[in-house]
Figure 1: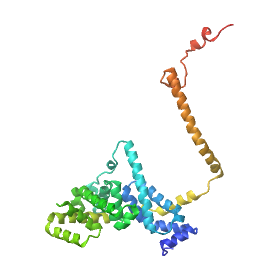
Figure 2 (figure 1 turned 90 degrees about the vertical axis):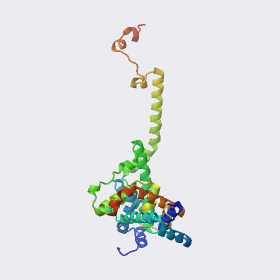
Figure 3 (figure 1 turned 180 degrees about the vertical axis):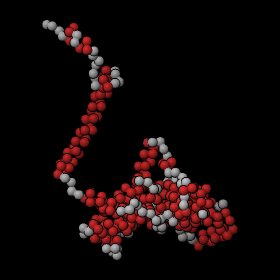
Figure 4 (figure 1 turned 60 degrees about the vertical axis):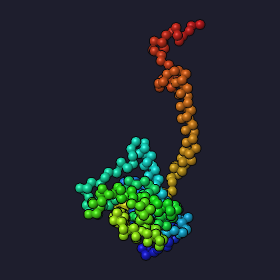
Length: 185
Length: 141
């Protein structure tokens, strides 16, 4: 089963082999996790959104015609669910009169250890971006999708993706520049 | 720094520039130390971002997903399938009933001019003596 392609695994699931779906989950968990954690930060909701992504995929398997790769399809679901979660979060924060950005503390320099510290710092900086900028950063710069794939997943014109990317990078540079020495260490 | 050059620099990371644009950018980079510094900083940020890729959920994530799928697929019990349509029928009735009760309570409060629970329920304050006062409550024919 481990050598089967994603398409074969999907066929197998449709024939009733649920173990094949478990293999698909194992195979694509890192990609979905990177998307969801990139979009929402490290918070308890990421697990729920991750599970929901695979459950939506399972329910829509009959309609999956293989026009895009399984990974890309899952990323699209994960991005949409994460954006929904961010909207919910915004509503919640509005209710409690708090800015969403305030929920994430600046990572403490003293507790940062090499890679882990960098990762936390970058993750914190990403959370400072507006969701529309965050999604292009996650897809293009973290997951490594091409600019046209990013445009396809987000259903946006290429020009919009490029301008959002350059604005997001400027913003990230601004946010990270006070910590750049830490980042460069 | 020239805004157009800066835009070109950012775009050079994600899009294929035309030959002419490449030339302009290369020329500007060779002349401007500030633009080179900006390029270095963007590269650093991009490297750090791509290094954050490795992610995973808590261990046994696939098992948890499969458990949820099994749970959602499990056929509902007879009692649940009997109650569900009833619930959907009675839900709008319950909402309408609550609305009517609230309407009646506000009418009571307006007519008794009392903004209190007693006013809402149209209960008048009657003392025990008044309740048993034969002059008020009992008439002998």
